[in-house]
Amino acid sequence: MDRLVNTVRPYAWGSTTAIPELLGTPPTGEPQAELWLGAHPGAPSLADRGDGPRPLSELIAADPEAELGAPAVRRFGPQLPFLLKLLAAAAPLSLQVHPDRAQAEAGFAAEEARGVPRDAPDRNYRDPNHKPELLCALTEFDGLCGFRDPLHTAGLLAALDVDSLKPYADLLHAHPEADALREMLTAVLTAERGAMAETVTQAAAAAERLAAAPGPYQAAYAAYAGLARHYPGDPGVIAAMLLNHIRLQPGEALYLGAGVPHAYLAGLGVEIMANSDNVLRCGLTPKHIDVPELLRVVRFEAGTPAVLRPEAGAGEEEVYETPVDEFRLSRQVRPAGAPPRQLDCAAAQILLCTAGTALLRDAEGGQLPLERGQSAFVRAGERVQLDGECTVFRASMVVPG
Image (cartoon, rainbow, N blue to C red):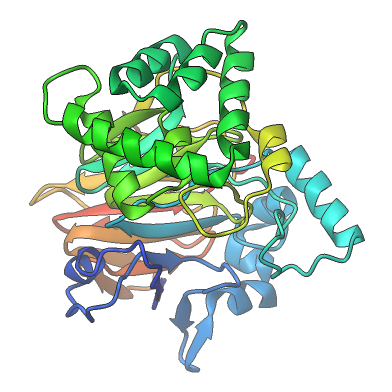
């Protein structure tokens, strides 16, 4: 068992208070957007095994099978296949999608062949991996996810009563629905920027007005008006109107697969993802937007986002089921007096305490207390018991038996 020391990423959209409050540290006054837990080379966690703090990535590289387990190495290679985060959004993140594995492999190979530096601002694929992700809310959490039925979006746009939006609403009546969604997104992202900026200004004012009155899209209008305050004139504000607005309650989660456009807006959550940096942006950002590549990756499928709730597993463990093997997220909410529970440690895992105090015990009698906000790495094959009145998230992976 290794206590982890983790890095905070100070992205501009981050909350100044949410992560410090969870960690029990004083705010610095600067945004604290994400706390990274894992072995990602961008900000690996540190662990001290008696010879001083060392990056978890270095410890794993020194003996992958001992750290991760032989089945995990055979399945995913000699690296931790997931990255766990605390994510604290006080302002909207960029509107974005992630590629599937085949798209990532092909895109990465093509950019490597062209000699595009991996840290170039106009690079799309920084690694050959896909990036499915799961966000579990710790507080009420707002986001945008997936395309709304295009006919419903046409009605939402019509209610704004902005003349320059009427051609976009007309596009949404095309058949089939995938063509309707593709045509509108393409038109928005390729429109003349000056004219689009004026459309955004008018649409935001109308959305602000409609957000003050009860209606089926009241919360969505409020979200779109908020986007325009943060990103005035950005075409992504209109692109965002194609998407479902969703509000998660604590304990609820959202799974995001390849090609699904999304943006996180506000709230604190536990996020887990495949260990990848591949992001294609649609708007709400000053960063590079590659429209042709974006349109190739987006899945133009309408639907209602599926809110995940944890399903009962062994003992008091609750599992957030997803269709990927790179990560598995579960939660244990332990009441006072609950008996210690033996953890399944067939593969490496990271434990994060988000409430109360957890106590880990190993087979040699070692103990590691985890206060709220603290975390630990458990190597494959260790025999570890979890005790204490606490809430603990457990990040691991799915490996062959």
